[in-house]
Length: 114
Image (cartoon, rainbow, N blue to C red; front, side):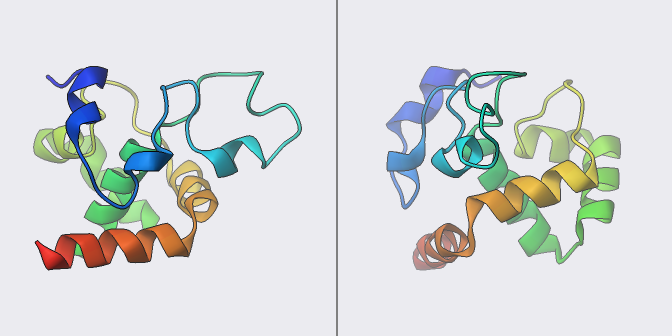
């Protein structure tokens, strides 16, 4: 199983956007007045990227994405959920929207160049 420290040696278009699990990514803290200080820990940017990548590669909408990740252990590991609760489709859509299209485009170009 991966640890938080294992992801620190990666480089790429979103490396500078990563923070602690509490930090999430910058646009998450801007959605609501107290979202960066109250409530549960935000979803790390790296996790949102893995979800978005699986969604794009499989050409799924958020509902099939939620269903398949819930049922398939390999997908759960790929998106770094493990045995934790899988977010619902509405939550996944909100996270992807908060992340922004520019970052997803950079990620796509980074993956294609490899």
